[in-house]
Length: 147
Image (cartoon, rainbow, N blue to C red; front, side, top):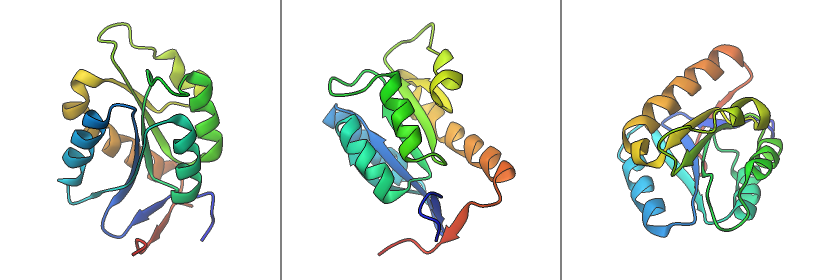
């Protein structure tokens, strides 16, 4: 298996969630795990933890809070992109209006979603990005999920 290519298990999309709010992290993990096609492979409370986990776990999707207290800014997201280049990165923000869409092109964010709409918009964005990436990248590996 190529260590730079994220995996989609035969049963689920692997997801890493990064947020410094333990309650939101827990709720989002529970929401996503309700879906049969999703497996939350890890959670991190800081950008630094996210870098290590993304490199180790090779998640298909990384969901990261833009406003974390510890080590998150657009440059940290660019670094995360360099650690896990094939992962889809979805940024969550507290902003309701004027979302920072410039981050998509400048720093490699695939989608930006207001946290208030995360529970309704996250799954459609994950699926949309998954199908776009599968169409563009035949090298994505489908492997059995680690036990």
